[in-house]
Image: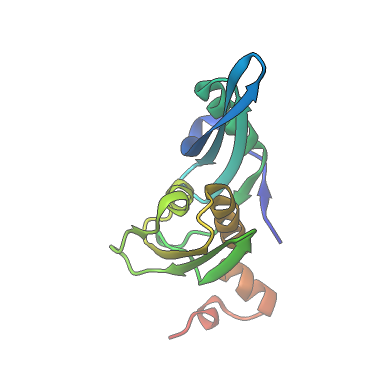
Length: 169
């Protein structure tokens, strides 16, 4: 059900660094430092992707992360700056709950979830992370929750009803 997307124009995608981790390998000759960077790319109009880059330098790790993120982009429905409905997802020990919010609320989310939601183009949302605060798993759980969302037009088409019947009111 995940809506994978082929990117047509790289210029629209903006990358955002979520977390960087320094890894030390101790050998007979001394310490060797490498860096792992998790990066989120999005166009601000409903397309989002994440990637992990590992390298000996921070800039190279970020560049590798951006390239990896461009390879697994997902289309997300964004309605009037918020998400269409509540969503819950888990990945590893991370659990996320995303709820639509009224206009003017802003992005009420922390850390890794905030980076994902802002990159996808959501301006008003309530989000809560439960369980693990590991940024890798939080990013994956958030993108899974967003990717499993359905827009009202698709729901109306699948049910064979008018679009106005999908919304409560």
